[in-house]
Image (cartoon, one colour):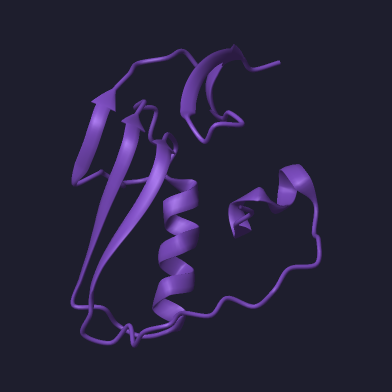
Length: 108
């Protein structure tokens, strides 16, 4: 997915307007992400979410918390934590059989 924090890196592209199938006002919302790193993606999602209303509670669940935060964002639930230098990234891949895997790659 592309969020507002990606514009500088990927450029602007045509995208559909976000639509939510529920009323955000007063709702308990659980955000899910694969890798939590700088916090910029979560900030962009929160900005978009609050455009739709004011939830009662927003929680964050991630597969991997790799540290390196640039913003005050923390996961409420993380399957694992993994410290990586800025020169490496985690790539999420999906095999033909539907299985997911995470691979450490050099960020070049």
